[in-house]
View (cartoon, rainbow, N blue to C red):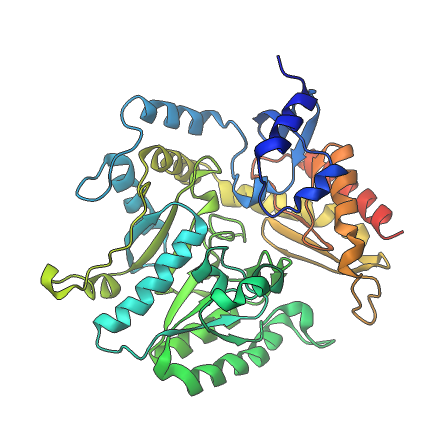
Length: 449
């Protein structure tokens, strides 16, 4: 039987890991996992780690959830996958029906893909193609927010704005219009988040007024810019944006890949603004963290723009080999059944309050610039000089210090730069939240020393 060190050596001999400078693993330990249960991951030595970030924001109801396990196993005995062009199956049909029931009214059509970036590609291409089919071929551009993130494929990368991911590939990317984010961290002293959102919307209003004739859609992450440091903004911005998009005849793409399925306190973040986007992109928690699957929900108006005789060449000829994968759809149906049959959002409100209380003592920390929260997402912003908003040099890698200390203490906390955040599975217990906060506090004290 291989030892943990054997697994690490074999991995490093051949595997290239995501979002990683592989040279780091000369000093940062690679951890070979053996199993998972609930909020815990276990390595090959038997050490356990509290998964404080839902394994990159995907896991909703715990690792090895018995109910989702059973659904996948049952489906495996019937159909694992089949071509989704010209064929269909019960898991995909049931999933589409349930998503339409849950989503803002009017989003009646579901286009499946296999990951979050792919969903963004679908929405971007669909919007561009919609206007062409409607005889408006000049509408080819997209407006995005500064500090936004929508994925790593070229189209998704183009409509995002986190320089760490985007800058090196800029020569490959389409040109977009970027306006300042309504991120409430940048508000003036004494200003409310809503007032700041209204003030920042003037930039979006101006961009739409000036460019609407050539803009296909605006794309935003509703309420929380996750990869951009868990920066948050008030729902009033989405209300203003929906009204302006209607007024200027521009579509709205809501990227709820990270914030959907209860993360911000409501099933979908858009609900807090009482709006319906033209495209709703979902992935990550859709399958409870089990299997890759994404979906773009859109309206009958968009669908009808592609519904025509084949010879008109108006069809949306976008495809993925694993579109509508039956196993992934079965996992998603089991995940949504938990929402339907259990008081998940109500329970999350109690857990979110416990998360807030667990870090309240850090508000007076000399290097904590802000603690912010939307539902089950909590972020602690660290800075070298809080008064002057001076960050630590990125080269000091203070977030990495927190990550390594947390691993040593048995917790998975993976800061975004120097933003420490909690985004745990919804099955976390109050005492586990407190344990996560204790580890984070120790890590902050160590990293800020």
